[in-house]
Length: 114
Ligand code: 5GP
Ligand code: ZN
Image (tube, rainbow, N blue to C red; front, side):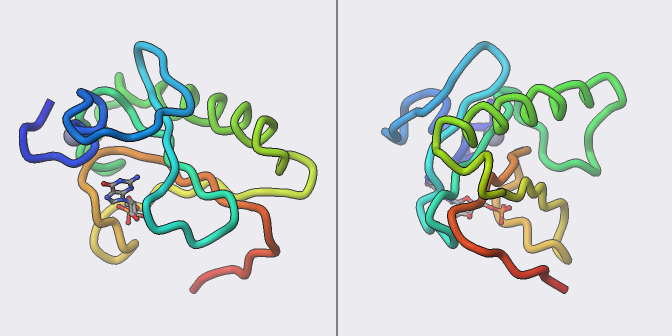
């Protein structure tokens, strides 16, 4: 846990947030500024700052996050209409929170971003 990290504070309960899924490795909640009708964040419990900083041994968490995101997409009713999973890494991607997380976005037609 990083003491000044927003997502570590959500994980610990210091920032009260409705948790939609949790287990010993990941947890999920709604993005505070949704850009799509369904916009959830699937977050690793471990404080990993970005994809670029992951060790090879840490990479299986991405598979776990994907499995949880797929389950949440079904629960949110967007599995058939379609959805996008996004992990931003570093300044050029627009990453704002330096704690590994996956965006689950759907509920409307998405444009590709350049
Ligand atoms: P990033 O740009 O790092 O990939 O995405 C970070 C996301 O976290 C943003 O979409 C932002 O709206 C969301 N976010 C930042 N702070 C909070 C918060 O305190 N609570 C929630 N639920 N979402 C947050
Ligand atoms: Zn953190």
